[in-house]
View 1 (cartoon, helix red, strand yellow):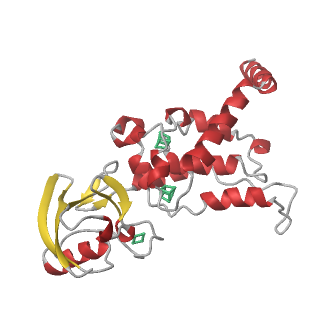
View 2: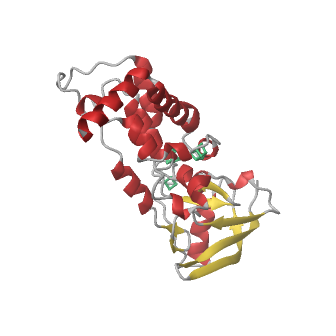
Length: 258
Ligand code: SF4
Ligand code: SF4
Ligand code: FES
């Protein structure tokens, strides 16, 4: 493929407002959208704000919306578009704009802090942890997350509903709760922390209606919905309808109110 000129529309602005700006820009063989944004900075828009770090799909910082779809700019090849196509690059819609393509993703750090950490088992020391390969594989899939927050951005629960943000952790952090709840060595329950209950009551699991949009945009190919959210929902429901859990809750409530 020889070089050609592409038509780009890039959102420029800040918290006070902004709009799409048109650019004609050179594209060369093998380039990705981030290369084009860098060329714009070098040739036509030196103050264009963009966040990036690794250019290898690993740091999770170059997230944006390309033709309306949440994607990593460094992993989106120009060859997926036709030469005639206008390519629109806008900041992540679910988070407040700082400037141009840079958004404030602080919401995600707040949600991360709300998930209690792994609780180490009391009776095991370092080096004594044993897990089946199946349990290791499950955790490892979730740990491939690069924290790009594309799943958080695409989830309709918060994408157009700012008011849901307080009560909903989003797919990335519900996945974290699921990982810990399914972790065979996590001693949360013994310490009095019921992750299934907090998933429902504090992290908003009930808002998720398993549309799988989060899974579709994950650049790491993590099956967020099938392997984390649905199992967590099943476990939370099992807990609710388990007669022993129900009885235990009733006794606990009576004891605490008496
Ligand atoms: S599956 Fe749940 S968390 Fe994922 S995008 Fe849909 S509603 Fe949001
Ligand atoms: S789960 Fe996937 S889409 Fe979501 S933050 Fe992690 S890597 Fe990004
Ligand atoms: S620059 Fe690191 S993921 Fe794109």
